[in-house]
Each structure stands twice: as C-alpha cells, then as structure tokens.
Image 1 (cartoon, rainbow over the protein chains, first blue to last red):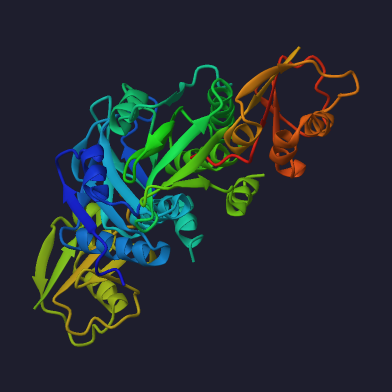
Image 2 (image 1 turned 30 degrees about the horizontal axis):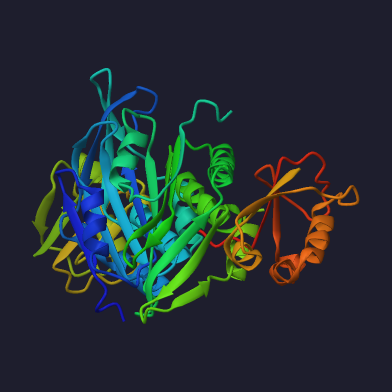
Length: 155
Length: 155
Length: 84
Length: 84
C-alpha cells in the first residue's frame, strides 16, 4: 500500500529548495525518525566544463520517476518521498537533482534515497550534454556501466 | 590526508539548520557532485513518548564524533563532512542529529553519511532517556544489537 | 499514424524531435521499427546504427526490442539515459 | 588521585556524576577498577553489577576492560551508548 504515502515528483528548470522540500515532507509527523536528502550537483570536471544541458522526455520523465519512487516506498516502507529533477542549462556548483526519503529508521531512509538515485540514473529519461569552458559544445555524456551495476545490485 | 578537508563537529542544545549547514559545506565548490544529508528526528513511538532527554560526555562526545568523521573522510574520499548532535530535552518531531557528507560522486556521499551514523550510534558517548506522554519518567533506552551489527558490517 | 519521438543524439542525428508516420503492417516489434526506420535515409541509418544501444519506450514506458508495438500511440527512441 | 566520571544509569545508580579517588596500586586495568569500585558500597555494586555491559573510556577514548589504566587523568564508566 503506497496509497497514503506522499510521493512528490517534479521536473523543472528553476532551482529547488531542499530544506523547504524536506520541511514540507516531514511537517507534523511524529512517526518519522530519519530523513535522508540527496542533492546532485553539477561538477566543473577540473575546470573543463562551463555547463551541463539537461534534456528530458516530458511526461515520461515524471511518470518514470513516480514509478521508481513508489517502488522505493513499497520496498523500504518509506513514510514519504520527494524527487525533483532540473532540466535546461546548469552551471557548475548548481543543483541538478533532489531526492528526499522519510522513514521511521535510518537504514530505510538511506536505502530509499539511494535506490531512487540508482534507478533514476539508469531508467529516467534524461540526457546530459556538456558545454566546455573554452566555449565549444561538448558531446552527450555516455551512460556509465558502473551505474548499471549499481542498479543491478538492488535485484 | 584529511588535513585539508573541512570537518565540522558540534554538540549543542539548540536546534540546527540543516540547509544552512549544507550550504556552508558546499559553498564555492565546483568539484562536488553529491551531498547527502541525514537528519535524525525524535519519534513519539505511537503517542507513548512526550520527549527524549539526551545526555552526553562533554569533550569525549565531540572528540569521538571527530574521530569517526575523519575515518569516513579517509575511507570514502569525502570532500567535507558536518556532524551536529543535540543534547537536552527533545520533543517528538524535533531534530536530534545531523550528518552531511560531501563527495564527488553519490555512492561515496551516501556511504560516508551512513558510516558516520552507524558509528555515532554505537561509539559516540550519548545516552537517551524516555519521558512518557502520561507524565511518568521512562527508563534509559537500551542499546540495540541491530546497531552493533550495522557498525560491524563496515569492517 | 503513429507518433514517433526522439531524444538527445538520436534526435540530433535524425534531425527532428518528432514525427507522425504510417508504419507498414510488417513492423510488429520495436526491433522491426528500428530496422524499418533505417531504410528511410542516411540520417536514420546513422542515428540507429548501433541498434542494441537504442532504448525504446511505448506510451511512455520502457519496453524491450522484441515487445510488440501493437496500438502504440507514441513510440520514443533514445540513447541510454544519463540523468541524475 | 584519579578523576572518575559516570554517565546515564551508571551515574544515577552511583548517585554522583564524578569524583576524585585514590586507587590502590593493585588496580592496574579497567576491569580491576570495576572490581574495586564494587567493594565501595551497594550503590557501586548495583551500578556495576553487569560488568561486561559497562564501557570504559580513559582520557576520553574507549578502552577494553583489560587495558592498563596507567597514568589516566580521567576514567569514565558508562552504559552502552544510545545516541544518534
């Protein structure tokens, strides 16, 4: 039963406020013992990168993240989960993705957030293109085998 | 070499601001790809509890958390870590503990925060006493074997 | 008519983000679709060159290449995902 | 004189948070210390009844019961920790 558990999913160009989202998720709860918040940031890859450009499949991106979140709620008995993914051009140091998992105990919250990230990376329809600091447009980021392995470790 | 890596440890009665601490830790960094923030909250245990009272060993508590954090920095190549533990009387829904791990990649950040929590639970000198909703003073919370096992899983 | 949508370098190589297309009755699976599209021109052939790499979604859900496309309203083709 | 500090139910049962004490030369390890303190009265005997459960820290670092206490400035006795 994930019916009563709050699952918030958003894809947006604007930045998010991790603290406000976490506060909203945990507001008024007295049964939650643990909140784990994951924030993914844009790295400059040693100064090489000026920006990442995030493309997504509108509709499916939200639907797929929703499916992943509901699986996590079910599997780890989460009390709530929030997942927000930004799209468009993102500069180094800026936020890309936010996942917040609320649970009675810490291991469920850690596992829930980590599970959502591992599946989001490999099955949510987003693609990253690199823009280089020297002004040139880089290529599309290749999918990593290590991400596939991370996902498979959950099965 | 953990010398250059920011390690912030505090024990305090007042509440903490997880977002402000995370912002401080990640400020100006372009090499960090992941921030994992763990917040431990006081549960009411199904309405049974009115408060937890946290006692600590001043001096050793800070020193021991610092040792745990430096081990995590070393082991997971973290870029920074913050650990704040509250003491005194804490009501259900309130914050107890905060751990923030900053890393280039997500698994290191998740592992770092989780490692610090597992060791903090079992080796940082803090003790919890329960106060019941019916006005009576409960007993001291017993250490859990599951916490010992969680710590041992890291070795 | 079936709506096809393309993303990332599949979109760039084909040269458009979406199109409506009349699929021949012989196109029964996602794999058949890839093979058919590759006959439509060099851009398609280049975009779909490494067939096994291409991911397929039908009505916004991932499917394997051998799954039937049946009455798909929308079929998406795209490279392995790199979000997060 | 050695400073002893107590926490949680060890503190409550002994009835004080700290004290300075002159240890006999025969008290060489943390385990010796527990055995000695238990001879000082019922409160101590009750607090330290289950010796194996009691944790010992010397100069604010955890030690095993068989480690020498040597020139400890401060020895702490407390129950298993339950923070976090």
